[in-house]
Length: 273
Image 1 (cartoon, rainbow, N blue to C red):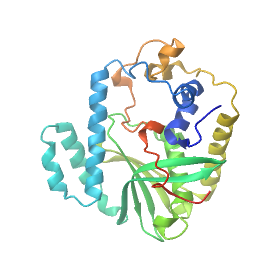
Image 2: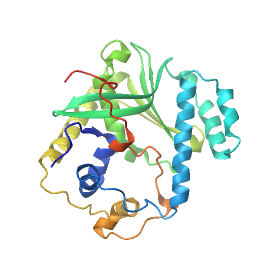
Image 3: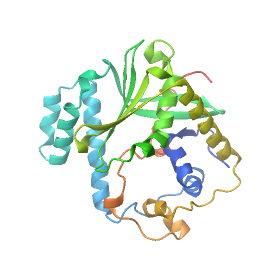
């Protein structure tokens, strides 16, 4: 394996490896350009991506102090986005801890590598709760069990526990951490996941095993789950058929490979290596 010296693992890259080792190789080692659209309806997919990114920027501005009514005035051109915005504002924000950080990136060392997480929102109360909020604009809500096993859930809670002390004014007990997925296209529907010291240890073992397996890999085999290939941008390299339908796509505008995070290590909060 040959990753660049400044490479950092993310939930997105690890999820790619878990879904298909060959996809990881093509995307992060060979760094090939995307040869195919993820879905048949490419233009609609791109529109939804822009729409989701716009929503996240609105939330960031709101968390940073811009009045909600002022931000809402810019949404007359997009009824869906206006509906998401209303759902966001009615989503029990007052129950979150008052110390809030939007679009913040943390990193932690693991197995001699960097593990990076970029959060939509961290809401903290030193000595109290440490809440991760991840806004989702997709129409489909995954099953809770699938979310619990997803690498985003694993990486985000683990990195906060390991690298969030400077925000919390001391080490964060895992039992104080909670991660909320909030589906703004579905009202205020959410899935929440608590944490524990036992889960942190299990997550560390899982992540370390993955990172070590990638480092030792002599080959990166194709997934045997052909359904994953329908929504893979690299399927043309593997002769794995046509793109899937947008209606069957579990939409997530935050598909997060290395190219989706600006890895300026001088600006990323971290614990010492």
